[in-house]
Amino acid sequence: MLTLKNISCKRGEKTLFKNLSFTIGDRCALVIRGANGSGKTSLLNIIACLSSPSEGEILYANENVTGKHWKEYCSIIQYIGHKNALKPQLTVLENLQFWAKLRDSDERLNAALSFFDLDKYKHTPCGKLSQGWQKKAALARLLALPSEIWLLDEPFTNLDEDTKLKLNSIIETRCENGGSVILATHGAVNINNSVELNLEDFTA
Amino acid sequence: MSIAQTLIKQDLVLAFKKGSGASNLIIFFIISSVLFAFGVGSKPELLQSIGTGVIWVSALLSSMIAIPKIFDEDFEDGSLALIFLQGHLSEVIIISKIISHWITSCLPLVIITPFLCMLFNIEDNTVNIMLSLTIGTPILCIIGAMGAALTLGIKRVGNLIGIIILPLYIPTLIFGVNSNIMMLFAILLIMLPIGVVACSFAVKTALGE
Image (cartoon, rainbow over all chains, first blue to last red; front, side, top):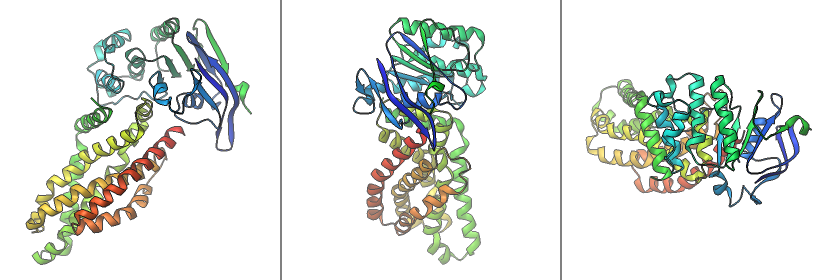
């Protein structure tokens, strides 16, 4: 269970949002919405501990994630941001293997590649793939690496309709299997049992 | 395989696949040294007296070329943030990045130093120069990493990194030219913890922006 307590975020003089509190339990998907610049990515960065909130705290299993539990917290989150974190010189498989080695887990690589139809491109350097295929290669990390909470920033960008449906289905499966998903998006999403959070309700 | 080994191996594989990075540095190292030799004339005594200094200054300038790449490419493609999110000590990540940068950017310069020693007719001093560069260039990498980390994410950095780090290179240059190995070693021991902690803080700050 992940809890955000009275989170505020400032960028320079501007307050993006304040007094934001919510709890997301297991088996739950949270869709973060908001206009451009409302702080969706900033909120995901705060949840991922990439940046600190101006005020408030984040608790996982009732423990503050920034203290001694940070390492444990990092091992259960999986963050797919705007940037794909792929090396253009390396093949899709080499890119995935690198991230798997950092998590000591390479058992599910082939299954993840197959799910996103990346088998035929797994020995192709990522720099030679289209934006859509690169996004699929980045999303394959979700299935390849063990994690409990997925943080997804605009995950549907550059994807074709079939892959959008596949991503929807793995998010739903993830939640059914006890995981949690927090995603920020502009587009329409149709995820069963998802909860919406509009950041504009928390602007100063 | 440990996190450090994984990161270093990844950087070495990438450097090998990119190909041109190390060769460009070596060419710059040789050309800048040769230009000095052409500039001061062909008197053997003069070349001998300035040889060590020229090799050190050329190595210093060559090592500067690749400094922005220590963190910049990983930052731009989003890898750096994810590496920091794997729950490993940030200091280990920084040290790994500095080691792989030294192997790809400075070790080749040390290896071709004997050739430049022949050019300046200082073959007798080759071992001392190579030893001083072997200990001195890691200091340059640490200072360079600090500059790269402090300017991470800033658009149009221009010469800012050079302005930050060049004054900090001076003690290393002085002790390096004099082949004062003990002092270089002392600077390395002092700069390593300071540089790694400073880099870690600066990179985390840049990632949070």
